[in-house]
Length: 168
Image (tube, rainbow, N blue to C red; front, side, top):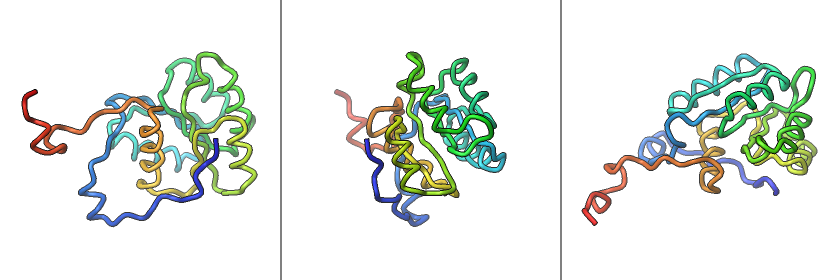
């Protein structure tokens, strides 16, 4: 699997307000593994504001344990971590029968081709460069939703238009 070479297109604030986003189902658990408390706080805020439950870990070892305990539907995994790095953690995830199908978005402050290459080779579902915007986070999630890797939540009937409310 190759990561798309395009980056998330910029969107005006008016377009963001008008666009209906297909979020994951209410209560979808997301594990964030990053040694930066700032990154953890930002991702947690973005995700919780859209109805996601978050679990956070400051290192890969703790993250893997939380993954086994809570079975998140999505993982944001930093590459540069103290102790075990993100690549080693991803290899463990992909080798574990119970965790292997969990979508993983690798993150790094350094968008090197080698990081993308190794992430792809060992099974990352996407790659996101830090720092990132709220729009970038949800752009990546929506790609996984479109690929049916995360369970979808339909928008409310009012957002679908009048035809959606007609009886069948």
